Structures are given as structure tokens and as C-alpha cells.
Image 1: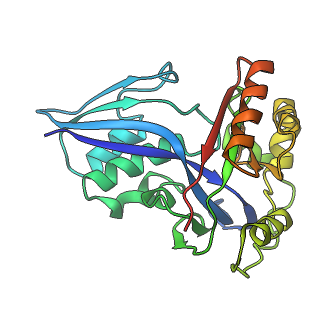
Image 2 (image 1 turned 180 degrees about the horizontal axis):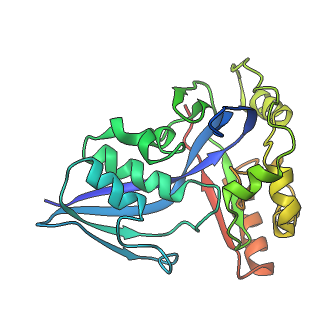
Length: 266
């Protein structure tokens, strides 16, 4: 019997780089939420592993053991056929591959293997707001995060995470403000505005399109880059304002990936 799963876009509302281990891994402190847009996967029993990829961003996606989805199924000890509908852009800072892998691990009951597949995979096992620390292995649900109306904008460039970290001058920065209590939307937005994405400046310094994307998010209560880029997000007052902004950006930048989304609150 086929199993259908959804792999939502991961959005780093904050991303503080707080240190670097001797083995080179960076230490992070990030508030992560998930949106109602993402990839879709179907899992069927099969005599041997097979991965088929379709969707608007299927070009260039490997269909063998190079794909995290394939590796997730192998770690789960399952011989299956996986159909992956790739709706999220690659190298976009919204966890496409990591979320796909986490969806497979959840479906096959193999969540314990998450960190072996990458630092972003553990946080993608749960689609609720979470605080992610360490190299990504320390995750905890965060209560009180409101559902947000966002516009996601990706200018169509792939940003290698390793290159962004190389351009990051300071590897030892303050963590998030740990007063994680917000009685209302306004308080949350005020808190969020005081936090950072430490990778935004180094990512934008090598990719001017990121700054261009941020500038298009006019009328947003807050605009910031997610992850190591290149997707940027704007927080809007309501769903109608987000849809209007997305439509205007898409009209001016028809080659960009632009979506009005709603995040899962807690």
C-alpha cells in the first residue's frame, strides 16, 4: 500500500552562528518554522530501490544514492520505490532535501538516523516551531510562536552553504535572546526584529540577487534571508497582504520563485 507524505519548506526565522568546533562544524542557534508549501513523496513497496523525480525543480536532481531520499530509505532498511515531486528550488535555504529525507525517515519509522543525513534533517522531523542548536542535533519545540503570513522569494540562484560560511568573518556570535515568551503577534515580531541571520551578509556579499530579493519585499513587517540563502522571506500583516505582495513581485520578476505561504504556529 502506497504511503504519501508531505515535506514542507523549512524557514529559519533566525540563524545565529555561535561558534565552530575543532572538526569544522559550526554551532548554531535558530528558530525554525515550516510553511504550507513543499515537496510531495509517495512510497511504494518494491523488490529493489528506485527513485523517480518529477515537478518544476526535478531537473538535475539525482535519482540514485547521491540523493538524501535514497540514503534515508537505505538507512531505514527498506526496499521501496519513491516518487518525489520536487516543488522547492535547490540550494535555497529552505531545507528541500533535508525535509524530503526527514519525511522518508518518519514514514519508515527510522527517525534515529536523521543526524547521519545532515545537520538540518533532525529539525525537519517535526513540522512545528522549534529551536535548533548545536550543529543541528539539539532541537526542542517552542510554544507561543504565532502562525505567520509570509512571502517567500527565491531569485533563482544556488548558494553553496560552504561558500557562505567561508565568507563569515565572525564565527563566535551571541545566541538568540532566550526570552521565548510572546503574548501576541506584535510582541513576537518585535522580538524577531532584534534577532539575526548571521549568514545573510556573507551570502549577499557574493550574491547581489539576494539583496535584490530583499528589496522586493516592500510593505513587509520584517524581511530576512532564510538559512544560508538564497530564499528570502517577508512577514506580512495578513494572508491578503501576502498574496498581493507575492503577485506584484511575481509580475515584476517572472523568472523568480515567489510564493505566499502560511507557517505552522504552536
